[in-house]
Image 1 (cartoon, rainbow, N blue to C red):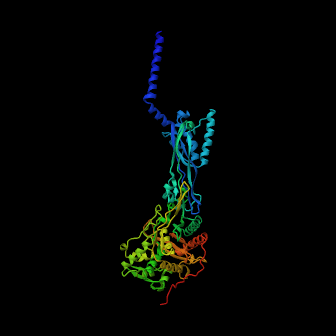
Image 2: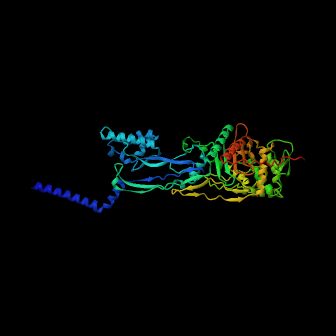
Image 3: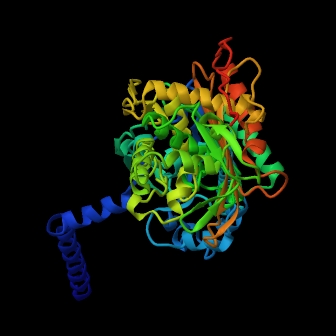
Length: 596
C-alpha cells in the first residue's frame, strides 16, 4: 500500500504537470505558439511579373522574355536533423555546382544560412531545372530503398522569366540590357523599366518537409505583366546601318562610329547604329567601353557638317544669296590666328554656294562676318540660330546618358572661337543633334523633336500612341529649299567634296565633315572626326542619314571618303525599303565659282 500510494502520488503530479503545461499552451500562450507554428509552417515567394517585349515599328521582337526558373533552397532541410548526415550542404553543393556554373564553396555557404529560403541561382533555363529534377528523382529513389540520402530534397524552383534578344547585338545601344536583378541597366530597358517590368505578385502556402500541403490553402496576389513597347526603328534598316558602320570602322581601324537614319517629316528614328557593339544577352563577353549608345552619349566637334547652320543664318538674314561672290585667299588673319582651308590653294573665286560645296573654312568665316555690324553682333546672331537648330539642348529623347553637347554663350567665345564655331570647331554636339539639323532643313525649316517610341501596349491589349513630338520653325521654307539646292552641289558638282555619296536616279543633298578631334583621355586634339550628313530625295525629302567615325587610323580620314560611302549604302537601302521613288527631275546645278 505505501508503494501504491507513492506511485499514485507520482502519477498525480505528472498529470498535474501535463495539465498545467496544456493549459499554458492552449490558453495562456496559445497565440504565441500559433504564431510560431504559422511562421514555420507557411512560406512565401515572389511571383515575378513577365517583362513586356520591345519590338520594332512592324512588331518584330527585338527584346522578349522566355520561361526561366529561380533555383531556391530551404536551408533547414539540409541540417543533420533532416538528412541524418553532417555534410548535407557540402554534398548538395558538389552536385549543383557544375549544373549552375557556380563555385561549390559559395553554394555550401548559401545552404548553411539561417532561415527557410535562399536563392541559389536566378533565371536559369528550363533545361537546367530539368537536370536538377532528374537528379532529385534519382536520389529520392535511392532514399526510399535505403541505399542513399536525397541531399537535394530541399532544392526547389520558382517560375520566372529570362530576357533574350533574338537578333543578338542588333540595336543593342538602343535596347540596353537587363541586369541580374531583372531591372533595366541601360537604353530603353532602363528608360522604360517601370513600364516594361510590370508588378510582381506574391504567393504564400503551407509546407511540410519542403512540399506544399494542398489541403492547407494558400493566398496569392497575381503578378501584373509589363507593357510592350513599340519603337520607331525599322529592323531591316537598322541591320543595314549597323553592317555598314561596322565594316567601315573595321576597315579604318577607328575607335568607333555611328549612323542615324531619321524620317524627315515625322522625326521618327528609323535606325541608330553603333560600332563596336555588344550582345545584351551575354554581357560577360562585352567590353565595358561598348556598353553605351555613343550616338547620343558622345560629344564631339562636328566640323564642316555644321557649316550648313552658318549658311542658314546668312541666307535667312538676307546678307547673301547662293550666287554672292566670295573671294577666298589662301590664308585669313583674324584675331590672333591665321586661318586656312583643308588644302593650300591660290585665291579662290567662289560663290556662296561654292563656299559650301568646296567646304571652305575661310569663305564661311567671311560670310558669317556679315551677320552683324560688329563681330560681337555677328556672334550673337549665329548663336541664336545654333540654339534654334538644337545645339546646347537635349534632343528630346530623354535617353539615359545623353549629352547636350557644349555651346558657350557668345560673350564667352574666345578670340579663336568667334571664327572657328562658324565652321564647326569650338562647339560640340552628339550624332542625334547633327542628324536633326539636316532633318530640319529637309522638313522645310521646321524642327521636329526626334522620337524613338511609337507607343505602348498594356496587359489589356490596348495600344497607347506616344505623345506627338514638339515642332518649331527654325528657318523659312524658302531658305530651307535654297539650302537643299546648295547641298546638292556638294554631291553633284565636280568641285564638291561629297561625290562618293551620289545615288543613281536620286537627287542627293549632303555635306562632308572632317574635324580635329579632342582625345577624351588627354583633352588635347588628336586624330579626326569624319562625318557625312544629308537627305534624299533632295527635292522631296523623305530620309536623313548621318554618319560619323571617330579617329580613323588606316587609310583616309576625310569625311567624304569614309563616311560618304556609308551614307550612300544606308540611304540606298532605306529608300528601297520605304519604296521611295526617284523624282526624275534634274538638280539645280548652282554655280560654284565666278570669274573676277
